Image 1 (cartoon, rainbow, N blue to C red):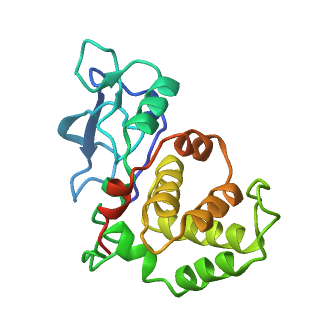
Image 2 (tube, rainbow, N blue to C red):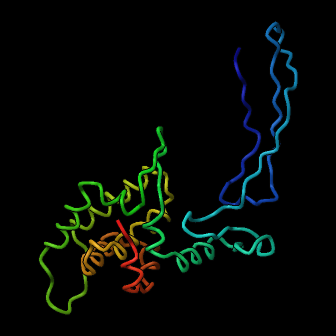
Length: 213
């Protein structure tokens, strides 16, 4: 028996609304059927929650009247996520792999720090020659490599591009093992719009010290 599939509709999940649904009608031929006739098996309505820009913030893209977590514009929703997210909360978030046996990998802080490239990358950034006193922090080759590594590690767990940037910012500003200047160099090396917006946040000593690896 072969299964024929017809593509009948497109709907971008990024613009999904909670009130929307897709109806799925399934029919299959009987085992003894050779003339192509099919009989209905059932119908299902598929619905999804409103899009959520980040796993680290309870912000959804939907009409404001639907829910207290709703923001009606994707750009504004992303900005709200960046405003609300906290490094300590991100680093203490528990993760599991996408593939079996799906056992816990611990917190994000643990997952990142257990990679060999993390400690060596931090040490390489810290060991780079400092610019003259008062000079702005500049990007570094070691910082660019560690940035690439962290994005690759987090991508393997299925995090979105925004959440990867949030994790990277949290590592640079909230990991006790990373000196402030080293964290600044890492952020400069990973520069993009989200990183710059996140970097405007102030991180208190209490927030930084709250993370336990």
